[in-house]
Image (cartoon, rainbow, N blue to C red):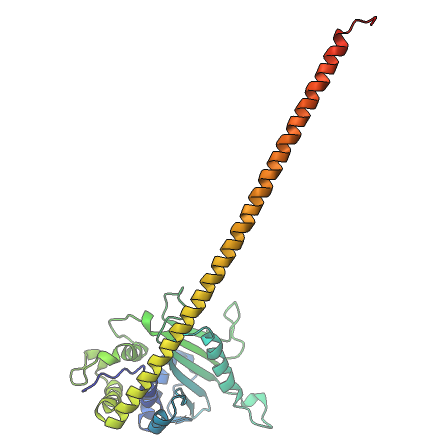
Length: 299
């Protein structure tokens, strides 16, 4: 390729899995990622929002996820998210719930609902305290009992994925999305020597070789850079506000501590004064007793 192409860029991601010509890639991806969680393998899909190159040129806010329905009416959503933000977990849950709820049309009953699977590839760590790269959320209770086996949400944090040896098709896809930008289409490593991966590289090569496709890619890259820049500015602003708030809280706490120290000092001085007065009173009492004892009885 003349230009390196990052498969994590949203327009490339959608071309890989959402183009009609790559329907078999989407089927392979879904089976690889969802695996044993599926009641049966995916064999056919209808892409509900297929890739359209022109939408990325004319609309920087175009829909960049991939939605599909298989021949069992099960629903799938796949999305790449390069920049995390505060409300991302809520957005992930909402998009799954929205897709699941859209199944029912007027007059349909709940038994028409089918499993819905949402797959998210994340370019930044979301669950920073967890070293695992794969997270599967399904409708289960604290004893792992299923309420309803109707799909779930699957998160994959690419930064945490570090498998050198590819042992599963899931790992093959994750490694492709993580390292694809650095691959040479003419000298692919052994783990890329499968029909699906070669087809995926053909899609990347098309973005590199075709002038219009490369323009789309560059436009999306520029847009995503702007989004990352805006997100960093927002994060910096939030951090500055948080630091300012913490500084004010620390200053207020210091004032409160100083006031408490002053009150404690005053209480200590008052206690000392009272102790001195009590001691003086005791001395006077003892003096009076001594005086009464030494006074002559006939006085």
